[in-house]
Length: 162
Image (tube, rainbow, N blue to C red):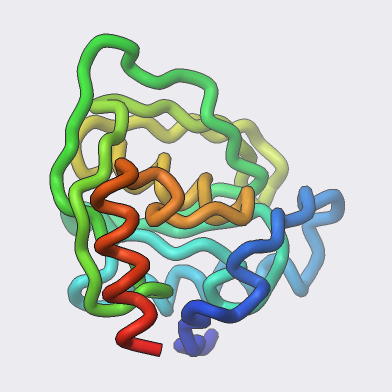
């Protein structure tokens, strides 16, 4: 296991959709170990594989003292009537936090290292995390979801950082 370096913008791996995991081999097992170790640090809620430079569909989370992972996650349900719009940040966009509208509840389905179906669901921070990390695997950042005026402000702040 290894604590991995977090890739930050403008690294192109962050904008590249990740490939499905078709074979759960030693490489995928090592990836999961690295995801779990790297997310298990104060202030980290979630981590997608491409944030550590691996373009495979996997992410880990660290919410309310629960650390876990899912392979090949797909969002299968979002609350339609309840939303949250609190500030969101990202390890790959360090130091910037902006109000981001997300569904209050999210449900993700995927598999574990044994190939067995996994269902992960949650509200509030867990719901936000599931949506945020799945976006990463699709090559999308939370900045892409910001309202126009907020996005303009975020892009200005990001340019000042780079």
